[in-house]
Image 1 (cartoon, rainbow, N blue to C red):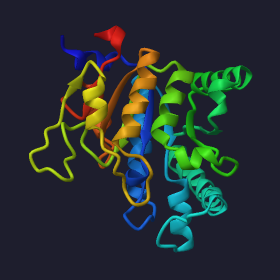
Image 2 (image 1 turned 180 degrees about the vertical axis):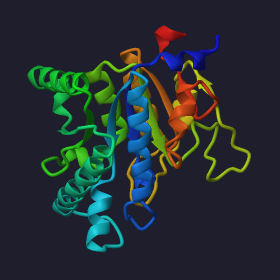
Image 3 (image 1 turned 135 degrees about the horizontal axis):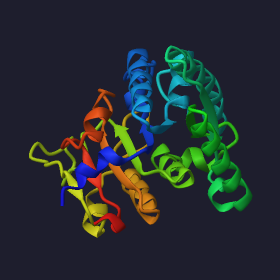
Image 4 (image 1 turned 120 degrees about the vertical axis):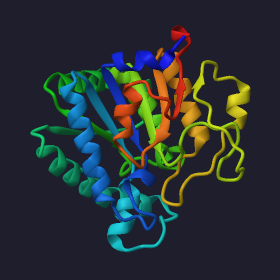
Length: 267
């Protein structure tokens, strides 16, 4: 079966963009890439798609704004950087989406939105209304009041939670790697990208690495965990490189890019 041919039919899409795709190695914001992301999402909306953006980078942006060379080690330090960075990110996203006459809505979540029935329903209703009026929800963890979320916290898992809440058709995780490989491509030159995975078994989990960028927190292991969360709700997931946001067009046209994890009920 040509699983990729079904991607053109996906209408509600959650896109997660990683810290490494939003910033330069020194933590400074890559404004051109953020603008490209906004341009691409605006075009996707014109094709009768609804898009939710899960954006990493708040702590990294705060670090860069203050001119620090690395993330703080303390929880209060991280929370302070997140507060500064989140305000900057929201302003920049609004500026770029305003150019397309698209409203954005900022949603900051903590993990209890999944376990608390009332909070879950409220979040579900908020997402639904924002999408109904043509706005783009921009989601991050509420790092300024979280503790465990920052330590455990990776926006791969958050994006899967969001996809579940939104009843999405597809989750696309954009990172600094071209997809899922049979071994770590940063260490092994002969590593091979796997185009399609229909069974997230122990072999897949064992092959997932844990290395991330210096300003980010997530590695391949967290992405595989996100895939598993999505598969429980029958949501397909793609991991691909976010260096060129226009790659989203190619993904939705069914081109062989990244790794497609097919949900069990779609196999």
